[in-house]
Length: 346
Image (cartoon, rainbow, N blue to C red; front, side, top):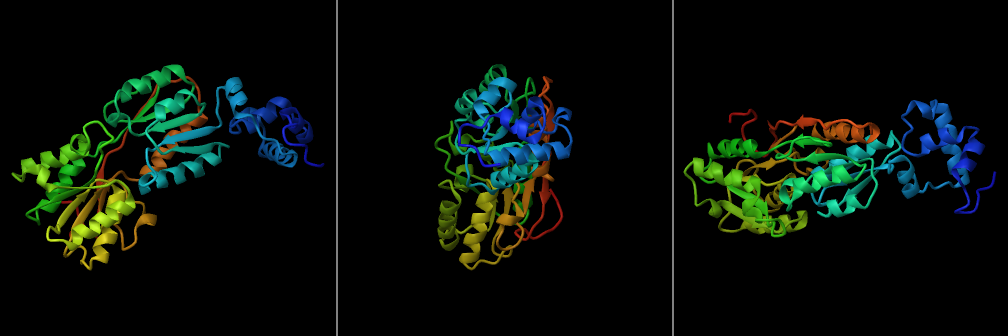
C-alpha cells in the first residue's frame, strides 16, 4: 500500500490496515503498549508496522488531552556538562523505549514553567533545593498537572509525588577526613554558581566542606575553596593553570563528577603523578565512559542510574492515582586510582 499524504492518515486508518480495533491501535501508539488491552506482541507489531507504512504521526497534544498521557519522560537536569546527567539520560532512554516512551532533557532551570504548559507521563526534577520556592513549585505542579513527578530533594517529603532523597553532606565530611589524614591542606574545587541563590558559598556541598574544615581546625575555610567557571572545558583550563602554578594543591575534593574528570585531564597534562603528587575525590558518581586515565575515586550511590531509571520509568508506566513514595539513596566510597588507599577508613 502506498504511503498516504502527510497529514491525511488517521488512527482509524492504522487500525484498519493492522486489522485491529481503534481502541487497540490507540493503546499501542499512545505509550500504553504495556497494558493488557494493547494485545499480544504480534498485535503490537502489526499496529506499529501499519503506522510506519502509512506514515502515521500521532498528535501528542490531542493524545494528552484525551488520555492524560504525553508519551514521554522529562528529565530536568539543568545542564548538559555533567556526565552524571548524560549517563542517567542514556539509562532512562533505554528503559523508556521498551514502554514506547520518549525521553526529553531540560538543560536549564525553567522546569516549572515548562511542566506547567506541557504534558508528560513522568518528570524528574533535580534542582528543587537550589531554586527560589522550589518545594512549593513542585506541590503546585502536582496539583495542576497530570505528570507523574519525581522530586530529587533532601528537604521534601512525598505527597502526590515521589521523592528521591540523596544527600552528599555526610560523604563530604568523610572525604575531607580521608584526605586530611595524609595532607596538611585539603582544597575544594567548585564551580562559580552566581545564578543560584547565595552562590557557591551557600550551596549545601560547600557548607559541608567548610564545616569539615572547621571541625579539623583548618581555615579560614574560604581560603580552601578554588572556584572556577561552570563547564567541563573551563574547569579543565582553570585546573591546568592551578596544577602548574605556585598554589598547586596536593589533595582536592571535587564538587561534581565532571569536575573530577576535568581535573584528572589537567593533572595528567601538567605532568603530575596521581595519586603520588595529587590525590582527589569526586562527590558524585563518575560514569566509566567519561574517564580517560583510570577510574576516579568517588563518593556516590551504588547502581544509581539503574535505580533512578526504574523509579522514573515505573512512574511513567503506572499512572494510577497513588500516594508518593520515598526512595532513600545512601552514599558510599568507591575507590579508584586517584586515592592511595583502596579501603574506606573514614
